[in-house]
Amino acid sequence: MEMEPAARLKPWGDLSTSLVVSGQEVDSDSLLMELRLADSEEFSLAEGVGIYSGPGWATLTVDERCSKSAEGQAAELIRFLSPRKSALDALKKAGKLVKVDVAGVAESGSGLHISPDVLAGLAELGVPVTFTTVRASGEDEEDPLAWLG
Image 1 (cartoon, helix red, strand yellow):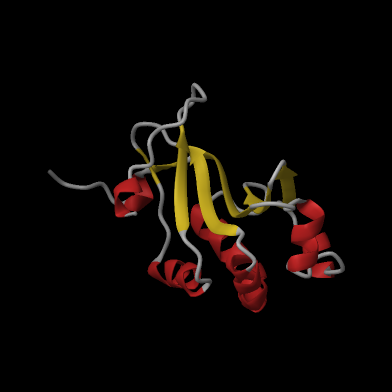
Image 2: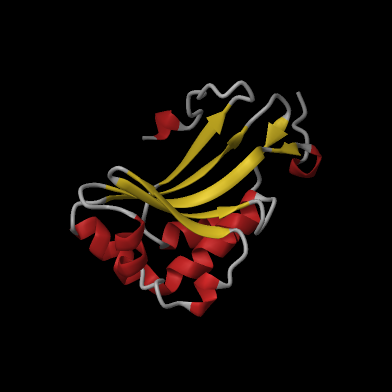
């Protein structure tokens, strides 16, 4: 059985790549402060990059307005987070759950491509990377990489 080249696979739909921080007293304001983004002109002018939050969690999310590809979104997230690695480490030391999550609608025949260089950049952040797939019907699918731990 031959594998299709990544270029021929349909990309995931509604793709977003996020730094996810969860724990007590986590919200959008605290994440902006921790990552020193509140006064960042670079952040305020970035198209398709935003902070979102709910009870006990907040995300720094790069969406399809910035890049339609997981590769481009992850690269943009790395660009924001690499100079702020000490802030990520401080969040982890404070007991917060910190990860990068790539999420989107995965349909039959769709795929996700992230180059080794971008994957290495994600690894250098020192946080786990997860993949959340959602069916078009809105039901969560099991993470096919969950067995990796």
